[in-house]
Amino acid sequence: MASEKMGIKHDLVPQRRESMLTRFCPSLLAFGFCNRAGYFFSRFQSSGDKGDLERAIDYDRKVLSLRPIGHPKRHDSLLNLAAVVRSRFDRWGGVDDLQEAISHSREALALCPKGHPDRARALRAAAHTLNSSYLHSHEAHELDEAIRYAREAVALCPAGHSSHAPSLDNLAVTLFALYQKSDRLGDLQECIRCSRESVALRPRRNSARATALNNLAIALQSRYNDRKEVADLEEVIKNAREALSLRPVGRPRRATSLATLANGLQSRGRVADMEESMVHYREALTLCPFGHRDHVTCLRNLSGALKSWHAQTRRSEDLEEARKYERHAVALKDHGHPDPSF
Image 1 (cartoon, one colour):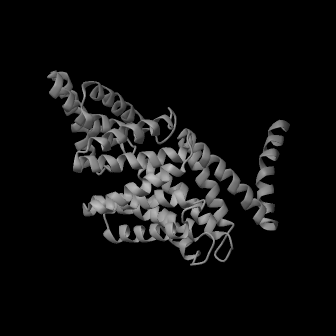
Image 2 (cartoon, rainbow, N blue to C red):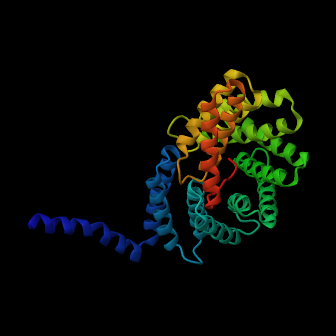
Image 3 (cartoon, rainbow, N blue to C red):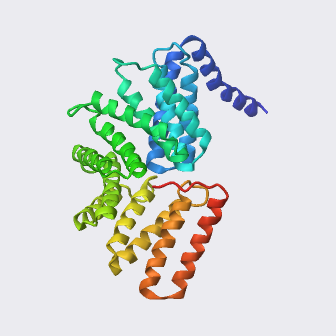
């Protein structure tokens, strides 16, 4: 019994310490929570473990509660919380997470008027979140707003600025969404220019380089689909391979690079390419199981690849497997599951 009482006493110590810090030194407590949130979010980005992301969100919520309206660092806490909540939406597709991220991003931007040192960061966050919302809702005004913010962020972070590359990435993503809506080649060309410049600024073996490479590969794939220039397709495959090498097994965005490379290989259409593409599509599906927001897309990708393979082999089992995945995708889509583009 004595040991049980001692255990209860020890369990209460951290709670009492937190309560005292909240009362007498909230800034120190917020600093500690912020560090913990950053640690768990960084670990999630490496491992993809949902528990790490949930811990990051919990700590960022605590930080925000310690920085009420009027606090000079409230905008920083809002941006951090928006980023982790948006990451949960990106992975699992919860609309409530997206709406919360938009709310925090807008409030943070309002707290960073022109001339504020963190305005560019707030603009990038708002552009990213609104672009995600546009892809979900197809509300044109959200895309227009996202592009406006992304352009302003690039203007505030010109060549030579430490945040020039992430600002270019941000603008490239919104321009690609605009191209998909407008079908104007000029929008796609500008997207490709931004992505190329970002890749050139990213050092080798850098995780951010993988994102820039993948964005560039996706944009070039779209230009190849439109113009059928072989040089574009070869560059798609080259960039996608490098991006995949920077996202080894266990990294949360590996499925995206697998799909991008598989799409390029499918377009090239050699027998060896088609075989390799199906390997990548299968792995992507494994990494995006039922409940993942890209599950339906993975089902459709693998189904399409198997149909193309059946055209080569004429094996009935390939066609039957393709139809099985297609049926699953249609059933999930009919029940309201998202089918976003990678």
